Image 1 (cartoon, rainbow, N blue to C red):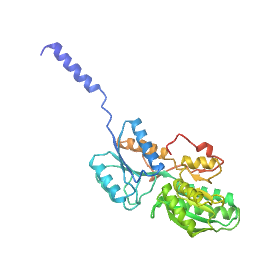
Image 2: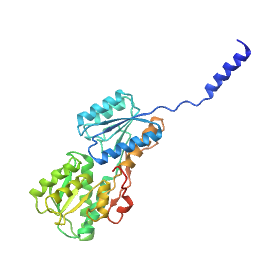
Image 3: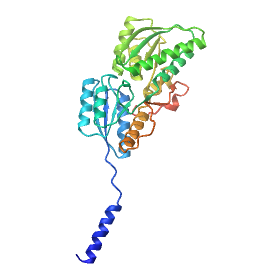
Image 4: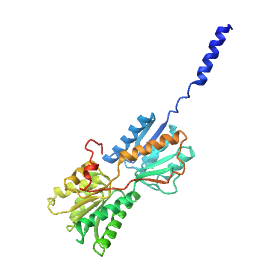
Length: 323
């Protein structure tokens, strides 16, 4: 080999050695329990947006509110060699098995929005502080009604959903504590519970049934804004919009609800911002995939609790937001 050719080869080898290694191509699996409500669509959109910024790809699946489909979705993602799984589980206990399958495949799991059974081997759960949001809403309610007798219609999402339980328990705890503090005694009636499946249409149907069975309803507590908006529609369609039925939600901060709060037509809601949760989960997923798991990460990561009322609704109203 001629000296000049040897020099050229050595120079090329040196250049390759000095070149920085390509960043790992990160693949995130996103398993959503449903897309049949604005909240879930906004959460997925936030994950996709942040992943694009960070150069990661996302494999998505919509379980259509079916636990067995969500199990199948996750198993399919694991077969595609995802690096991290972000999951909003349909059922707290029913999805534990696939988190164990993910752990066996060395795929970290991040739970978002909902909760999962403590036996699940997950990195963390990122969600709003449902119990504290609920307490803030309960406190707000008593500030409005003082010692008025409350006959509450409760609109819940799904049976056995631990987030729904935390939300309604938080509100009821807040009501009792506020009554004791503000009026010196405590008590209220939950006249009936309807199951709205977290959707506006579900809220309409559940509220129609509750109004038929309980004509003395003077307050509606929904576990999310979509069902509360459905209840509002049912009340209007029944010609009872003038009955001063107070409508409020334990969560979410949906823009339509916030606008109605501004206008004085809807009571209050707890802040549960899917854009914040989606971004936090994706940022963490990319760090974990790159071997940068934060030390001492908590089992539950809460976003700050806020009660959105007429006093602060302008601060949280985002007309151009997806949710």
